[in-house]
Amino acid sequence: MQLNPHYAELNESYLFSTIAHKVADYQKAHPDADLIRLGIGDVTLPLARPVVDAMHKAVEEQGHKETFHGYIPSEQGYEFLREAIRKYYAQRGVTLDLSEIFISDGAKSDLGNLLDLFSADNTVLVPDPVYPVYVDDNVMAGRKVLYLAATAENNFLPMPDEAPAADIVYLCSPNNPTGAAYTVAQLQAWVDWAKAHDAILLYDAAYECFVTEPGLARSIYEVKGAEEVAVEVCSFSKIAGFTGTRCGYTIVPQAIVRGGQSLNKMWLRRQTTKFNGVAYIVQRGAEAVFTPEGMREIQANLDYYRKNAAVIAAALDEAGVWYCGGKNSPYIWLRCPGGMGSWEFFDWLLDTARIVGTPGEGFGPCGKGYFRLTAFGDAARTQQAAERLKAALATL
Ligand code: MLT
Image (cartoon, rainbow, N blue to C red; front, side, top):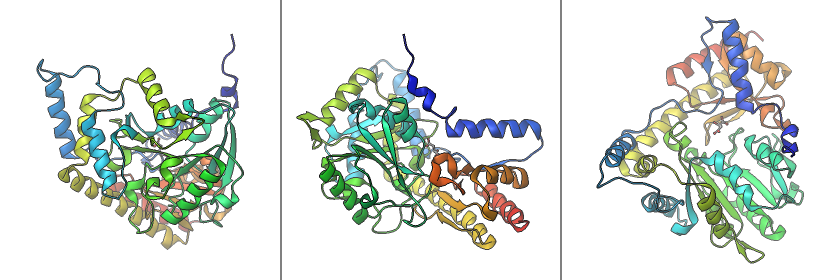
């Protein structure tokens, strides 16, 4: 009997758990401290009314014999939700087949589960800094992870001409944590590179709803030929506040075939064996996101978060602190002032301004000296945080 030895190669705890413990310890030592939490990217606005109504209706259906739903007919997800997602993509000129859309309980699970489809010998390329889940998932599986530096010099958007050879490449755009977003033209270079290197792109589009500038991609499938090399993972968490409700989706195109095997068929095989689908009630709620009323309310919520981002950005402008992001992303990525390290700034900000953020270093070595603030907070509290931030920074 041998336990998985690769767990010993991981950091002791997941980034956001480490932060939660640190903050809990601080709160214990300072019970009166009024902390403002701009750390983990968790939403604060409630679900949109059409989503709540749809879930209420679905709950009622589950309480009557005539309308009750047992096991989901397809582990891939109810057709009504997959059809709504298909139409959402069609609005952007992306044609998907229903068989290519798989409903999940969120992006995080599928980003790890997808690795079941690949050999443990594959080499993985991960931008640095990036959402720590990509690295940890692969370390757990014993896969070799290579890093691609995302720095201020390349505008935090590394391109394939800087990339070493790899079999699987993670891309996240708009990026968590830097907020940088690829243009369709830049992603074309990645798709062409993947074709030339027989690589697969795992594209995390969880923050696509924050894109406002023209030319920036919201889906990898806006790029020609992407359906032959890219899997897209997305979530209802950020677009519709489903962080606690749990629903997402993964697109596995039929055109991805390697060594005579269809990735789509493999994923279907995997899901039907290991997953029993997302609750009917939740899928009905997710469907309502795409109704005109749902979309209207959701856009108003996204604007609320965008305003928070502008408030934080204005405070940093005033204080003369360098930052990026916050425009096509809910994250502001700032350079720690006074040459402070990421964790040093975390402690300083917590103690001086009672603000919780996320140390850039937690997203990878290239995040050293950077810090992330989220715009998902309550508007009044974010305003208060901006005032505290300015006052604290003025003391440096
Ligand atoms: C983050 O703060 O990076 C995200 O909220 C984490 C997540 O989506 O799991």
